[in-house]
Every structure is written in C-alpha cells, then in structure tokens.
Amino acid sequence: MQKVRIPLRVLTGHYADATLPVYVKIAALSRRSSGCEAGVAYLSGLLGLSKSTVERALTQLMRPAPDDDIAEVTSYRRTHPGGRGHTAVRRVRVPGRAEHGAWVPTRAAEALSPRQLRAYAALAYTTATGHPVTLTELGRVLRHRSGKQAGQPLDPRSVRSIIRALEDLGWISVDRRAGYRGRHVYTVHDEPFQPTLPTADLDGGSGGDLDGGSLASKEHHATDSPDDSPTAALDIRRRREQVVAREPVENPALPAALRRTYTGPALTLAPRIWQVLQPVKPLLAGLSPYVVRALAREVGRQLDEGQEAARLRARLSHRYASTDDIRDPGRWLLGAAVVRHGCGLTACESGRIWHTGDECPVCAEASARDLWLRQVEADLDDRERQLGLAAYRLPPGSTPPTHSCRGGAR
Image (tube, rainbow, N blue to C red; front, side, top):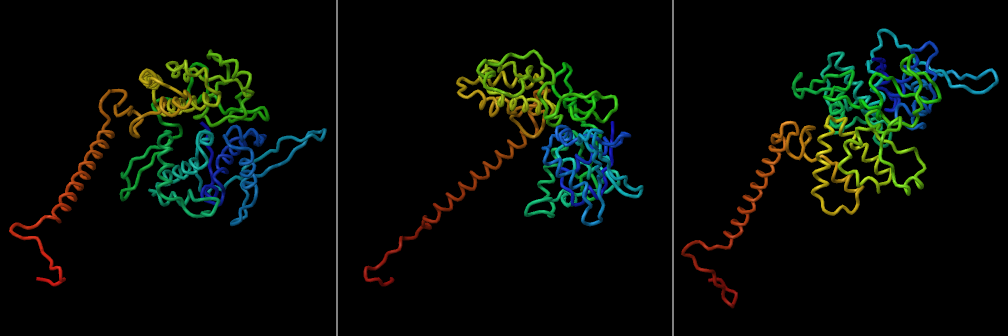
C-alpha cells in the first residue's frame, strides 16, 4: 500500500478541496525516477473529477501561495525532437523534516470525494499527533472555499454528515463520547474496514481489484506501480461507484429498438449486479440504458455498504410478487423496489435484523417513542377539550345571570 504525506499548509491553507486528490496522485506518481508524466485527462478519469476541475487544481498548486509564496507543484513542459508536444513532467515540493503533514493512502484519493478526503486527512493528522479534535475544530479545516461564505467554517451538522459518511464507508471508526471531556475518539484505517470487500468481483466483473493498481488511460502508462500494465479506461468514476464491467459478460441482450437509438458504450454490468436483478429480469427489457445504469449503481452501492446479494434479491422478489400493477417499471424499481426500509443500521431490513430475524432495537425504540408521543398528544388534546367544556359550566347552586332591558345592573 502506497502512502503520501499532505503538507499541513495544503490541508489547512487556502487550497480548494479538489487540490487534495490531485496533489496525492501527483505525489504518488512523482516518486518514479521520471517524475509524474500523467496528463490532465488521465488524472481526471482516475480521480472521477472533470478536466476543468483538475486544471484549476493544478494551476492553484503551481502558483505561489499568497501567504508564504510557496508553490507545491512544479511543471516542466517537454517536446519531442520533431517539435511535437509531450506530456509535462510534474513534481511536488519536498517538505522539510520539521514540516508537519498527514499521511494518507493513495487509494483514498480515488475512493473519497475531495471534501471527504480533506476530513480523512485531518483526522489522520489529529490521531497521529494525539489531539482530541471536535466537530467545531474540524469545521475550521473544512471551511467554505468559495462563494459568499468563503473562509467561514463549516457548521457542525455538515461536519457530522461527512464523518458519518466516512464511517459508513469504513475509512474511520468512531467511539462516541469516549475521549477527553466527552469528545469522540477516531480511528483512521488505511483500508476500508467493512465485513465485505467494497468492490471485489470474483467473476471478472466491474470495479478495480484491491491489488491491481490504479486504472490508467491511454495518455500515459505511469501508475502507482511500475509493474502495472495500462488499461484502456479513461472516463471512469471512483472505485466504489464503478459498476460497468471492463469485459463483456453473459448478460441478456437489450431490445433492438434500444440498440438502434443508443450510441454510447455497450451496456455490460457486473455479474453480481445481474445476480441481484434476476427476480425483476422481465422488467429490464423495456428500460433505457440510463435507468439500468442508475439501478445498477444503487445495487452496487448497497452491496458495497455490506448488504448481501441474497438479501437484495429476496427484497426484490417479495416486492415484485406483492405488487399488482407496475405502470412505470423504471420509477418503481428505483423508487420502491430497491429501496431499503428501516433505520440507519445496515443490518436492519424493514424493522428486522436480516441475519437473525429479530426485531431491530433501534426501530423498536423509535416506534415506542412515536407511540409515546402520540399518547402524549392525545392526552393534551383531551385535557384541552375538557378545559374548554369546563369554561362554559356553572358552579353548583348558581343561577344564570339576568340583564335588565334598561341596561341597569341588578
């Protein structure tokens, strides 16, 4: 596993979020004797970012910072003997021994979004230095980098959602209220810590193997390992979202009408995706490639989350058998069939723990709380109704007041 160090000035400075994954990849590739010769298109496809975003990140990294006049990346243009242009060679600045930084695995730059990578690197630094960080302190690091709120810290609610996403993906573990003065204790993992490997396809399906190096493009062959062979895969997304197979597999053919109108790449999905979609196979023939890909991404996301293929297949089978009229198959599949019902626990399936069949304690607690709230509201309504009726009642032995037609009081 290859790790690089992100300087603290890059992590907490004025640099945009997108500069972090670009810096990590350039730092990893520049360890070769020839330097980083990857072009913008290669970095864009590898990191799942647009070319314009990568270009802006490179420009920001190559310009001297306004506070200390230091540039993190240097670029050298090259030309062939005939005058034809060649990919530039980029190298990162060598930080000093006393300069602080956060060590992060290069795979995190491909698997996480730029803001998640910044949060992951910040937690890696704080855990290494033994600093019990708070959500407010993380918000100062994950501050807004553009817009009207540029420079302002991120609110704790947004920071909490980022931390929860990192925890769900398995990159960190959180022991809540277990640290100094009730602060959370974070454990940073070099690999996603989950019961099942995130994108390991044993049958040659989609996704990158954990030990197969980075997916490369035809622009340059330099990957994280000198022994890796280039692969023709340019416009790809991050590993955990990639569901399109690199090689054809045994899939049912689409209708001829779709093959005539669709001009994009051939629609081939991973075997694990087709295994899950077998119960609803009759509904797939009439779907557009866009809907099929969206459905496959959702299935792949849930599989990466730790849900078993048998569980998703049973869910689709039950809902397909219990639904009489399906007017829009695509909307039904994406909005009803594949959606998991239950609480935030991954093992919860419609209020039951999938592995044991027992009632989910979180759902049971939420149901009891809702029942208690409804009872309280009913009691309050009943008391208000009784108080309203009592206002119109007369005390025992009293007579109703009478008024003189002359307006005088008796």
